[in-house]
Length: 71
Image 1 (cartoon, one colour):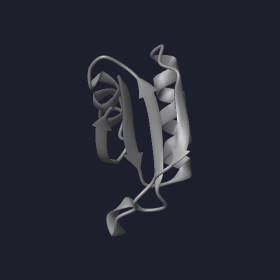
Image 2 (cartoon, one colour):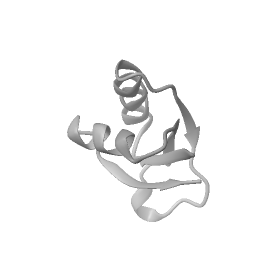
Image 3 (cartoon, helix red, strand yellow):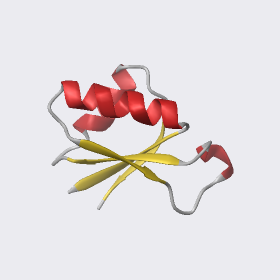
Image 4 (tube, helix red, strand yellow):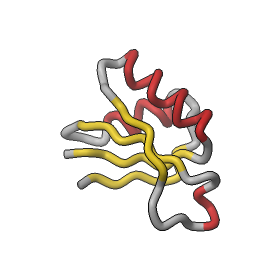
């Protein structure tokens, strides 16, 4: 399963990728599709995980997670 975690800026996306890499996750930064007004600049961090642990890791690290979904 791949988690798509919305973050507001490219800076937060880069920080998120680094934080997740330190925890053993390989994440990719992508542009968000179907932006809402609250999505900021529209960046998504995509990470393969079987649970929502990457979302929790980012929230605990102080990243402003604007939403997450898995596919």
